[in-house]
Length: 169
Image (cartoon, rainbow, N blue to C red; front, top):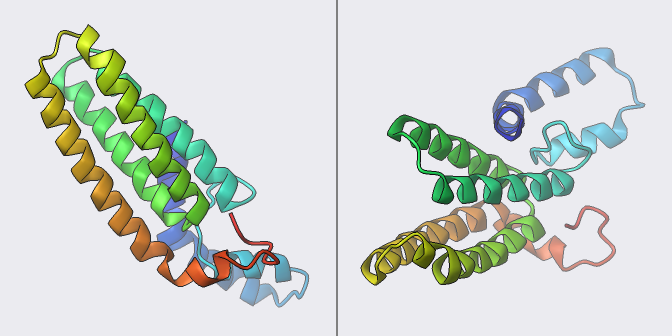
């Protein structure tokens, strides 16, 4: 379900917002002011009420996917599909442009790495060299995620410190 919702969020961001705005423009109704405000910010929310709720769901499902990827020994084809699903969920997480959601994801990801390196991987019989490789590769992925999320939310940073703004995460 999470991958389907993530694919829908990517579709919504690149194609769906434009179609919805065109439809609202054709109807000419003024009752859609709240919806126009949400759509004009172009923050993916898929089937959820707000991008902030969607980002909390996707972040939770990402950790389930990463945990499943680490613990379950499967065929290479299954591992490839899980990696594609995780990648699409990360893209949809970035498209929410949620500062709080991305910050919480990074903090939780660091906690997840600590737990994996401290408890799970030694029980699977991996050596310290493998732990270092996994740690370095995840640190690299985390750096790329922070860089890309910073690109998406840089313009929202000043308004995020305005406590009177109802659109804050």
